[in-house]
Amino acid sequence: MDIPGLTIDGAVARITLRRPGQANRLEPDDLAAIAAHIETVNARPEVLVLVLQAQGKYFSSGYDIGRIGASRHVAFDEVVNAMEDARPVTLALLQGSVYGGATDFALACDFRLGAQGIDMFMPAARLGLHFYQRGLERYVSRLGLDNAKRLFLTAERIDAQEMKAIGFLTHLVPATELAAAAQGLAGTLAAMAPIALIGMKKHLNRIARGTLDEGELRGDMVRAAESADLREGQRAWAEKRPPRFTGT
Image (cartoon, rainbow, N blue to C red; front, side, top):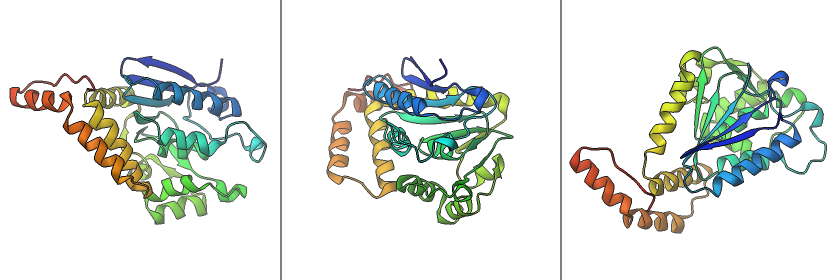
């Protein structure tokens, strides 16, 4: 099967794009599979980290241009928004270049790790395509207005160093070190206190979008303050040992 696959290993889940022969171009069936995988992961409270990765030379060339404007069961923007709203902390692992709508899939993730030598571009204006609201918002909130205009309005191709400089990549490493860097970051995140980790990820994203629910934030703060994990974290700090969190 060439639709995206899902694997879960303890606290870390991985969605893998599997169309390397087509530069991991995204088809309607791929969107449906990704949406279903996100739902599965959201329902597994033990999963704290979700990695979006790909096989082959390219991360993804984006949505199939020939299908733009055609009817489909799952809307592209809804799936990307679901990635941003996913319960676990999300990592996009960019072993290869990323183009078009796939750039927004990467931006929807909390961390974006890239290999030296990759590049990106957003050809919407060149295609006559007007991008959707939350995609525009992600570009502005993560990259700043000037960089969002530069990428959307000129369709300029930028290299990995520039991707890191403008904030598209949170990490830039040699290709040979990318898998280890991703594994290390996933391990670091998975070792955190789940209630605080998941709660702060959610509220930071809402703050960035201007949709913070202050009542829900206060509720999550109280839940963390009353948790056994906070007491365990305090003991571990005092005893100079790694904490053993349970998510309670």
